[in-house]
Image (cartoon, rainbow, N blue to C red; front, side, top):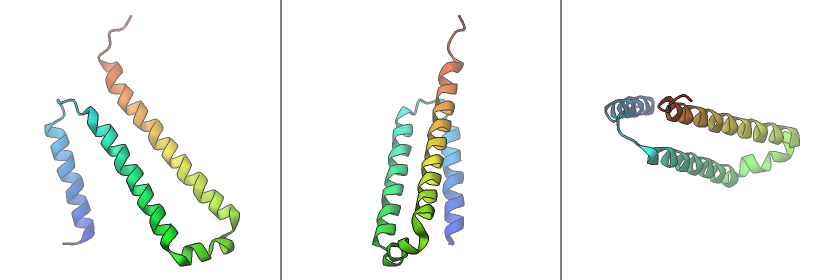
Length: 99
């Protein structure tokens, strides 16, 4: 089975399970997702740090390219975190009475 098919099936199965469990409180899921994202970023860092070609070419890339990559990653992480907070809080405020 090809990798893309496995990824698509994983997403579809997750959507199905999420649909079936949508009425249950899954507060632990937010923490689990954040843990997996941090683990994924950590493993990417290990991969980059272990690749001699990438490390050897840092001087060729220059500090601007490294700074651009860092700022792009940081911006994407901050945007994802902000969106996560908005989506998470949207569900909480939906059930609150209006004063």
